[in-house]
Length: 209
Image 1 (tube, rainbow, N blue to C red):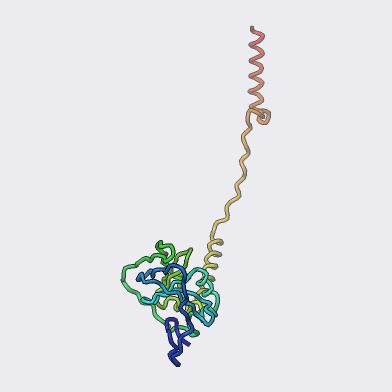
Image 2: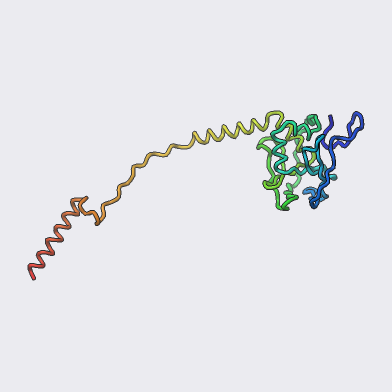
């Protein structure tokens, strides 16, 4: 069992189960150090394809591949090389926050705390993929395997249900009947009196002439 980033087995010296794939497209720049990313296929059949920076060892993973890694334990095992990463403690620094550009569309990516509670801040472009600094993807897989992702989803469901319960039920409003118009003068008795007085005055004026 070896970890992602190891090119040879620490026990027998054999080359790791990863191959550097030929990428026919224009090489993408590393968002962190701008070195050309290298396409890598992981696993014995090369099912997991990612792009790695040979300088900072960061990883660029497209949307579909990351979704598969989040839901499939076999994909997770391939990324980890068959072993869970050693536990790492998040290091808080006072360094200036730097927003990175997407290697695909070159727009600034969003900084997101994965699942809202993992403590792993990733850089994500919604339409193209996610950038992981060194060891961040391993930490996320460890978070998923420990039940953190499912716990976060359950928390979101509970918050949504509580919000729906706390909303006040709107009071029933009686419909307002339209006021009678001149087109229907017989609905209101006062309108009828006004009409009779008007007709009586008109007839009286005719006789006076």
